[in-house]
Amino acid sequence: MKAKVSAQAQQVLNALAARRCHLTADEILENLEGIGTATVYRALDHLTEMGLIRRLSLGRKSAVYEYIRTNHMHFVCETCGSVFDIEADFTGMAAEAAKCCGHQVTWCEVTAHGVCKDCLSRQKASTDEG
Image (cartoon, rainbow, N blue to C red):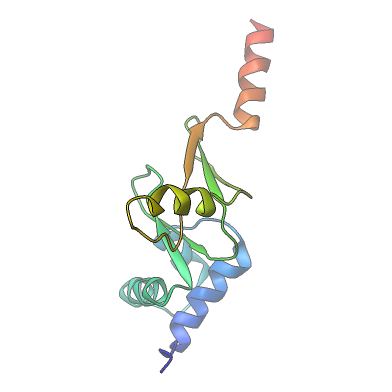
């Protein structure tokens, strides 16, 4: 039997699906009217358990949530803190690596850290000026 999604959880899911980015619980709360903080957190937990969204820490203070669309990796800018999706699926490689130990991979999370192109451009511009 499939778990039911409440009207409030559906609003949270819609907010994540519409934004196509990684949002904290507070950012989701800012986008919704008439839903309390505790309700948003319960909805996020429920949607995560159902496998409709994913909770990620990505080295930040607050967890972020994303609507699950495709397998992809994340790039976190160490300068500005922005998080970018990069279309790349490492699940097959992880599955092969785990197979030798008798494990089965269901999904794979890969996060790269570095400096995004916008911050690199700003750094280059300030170096050129100096």
